[in-house]
Length: 161
Length: 161
DNA sequence: TATTGTTATACTCTATAACTATA
DNA sequence: TATAGTTATAGAGTATAACAATA
Image 1 (cartoon, chains in turn cyan, orange, blue, yellow):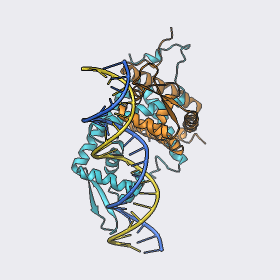
Image 2: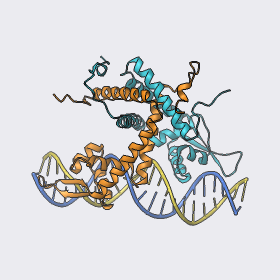
Image 3: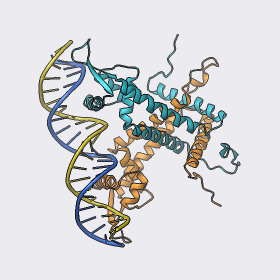
Image 4: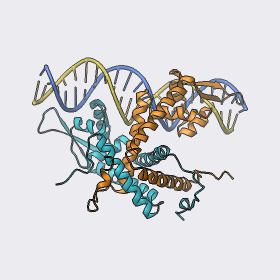
């Protein structure tokens, strides 16, 4: 079991098109994240906000750039998270105009729970593959993301020379 | 070029974790769809609505189930699409309570454009891989989706016996 | 003058609850 | 009574434009 699809004969060429396969896979993973987030009353964007704050204390402005949002949208997003006690605002010591955003303990705990459950979901999905397939998939996906990042002038694994 | 990542030496083990790789890839693909849809002033849910209607003429009720939305949300979604001239409502001949939803020519044309551009985006992404990797990826992703569908009691490639 | 952040406004998207019309 | 759909209401999320405070 778990090899059912590998047992397909040569004549059985049923396979998704490369594009459809990637699109469907991305939906499946996206839906997993959405579902887990919703269990904690989080939207995807709130989850991303908390995730970004795990290892950063950015200003509203920086946050907006990281999340791809306008400053006004970012302001509202932070406001709603703050009202729930998940993040805190503090004035920047360096610039009187700026506001630093950070996770509260409650926010950190919430995002840890959600992300470990999401990791478990994706792991369970990957466990449906043979070890060989799983390794090959990881290698190829990494190459794909490195190439895609390079297209946008980003080095995914910067030299640590 | 295009082989840069394949040229990594054996000692260079930099690779994303399987879970992170899949998560990041799914974001990349999702963002491509979002961006292309936005160019046509479509949200993802509006795009899905039009996509579903390409080969169906469902009632509001059926549409809601297909899209995973409440009937009131579906009603509003259709209302906004209708106001833009992308879909049309018609009374069901079979049931006086029901409303059938269908694509207009404008809606069909719009969704065709958006989807062919999205396909081109994903194809361009896949073109960053060697043919060997691309084939392997497609095979493995298909296996993954078949297994995942099976977990939910769905047969992705029903026997056509 | 330029930048940071908030606020006012407007729209999409979503759900719950109440309602109308039909079955 | 039950079902199909709409409408009223409420709230998240988003952007643009106008604003205040700081640089």
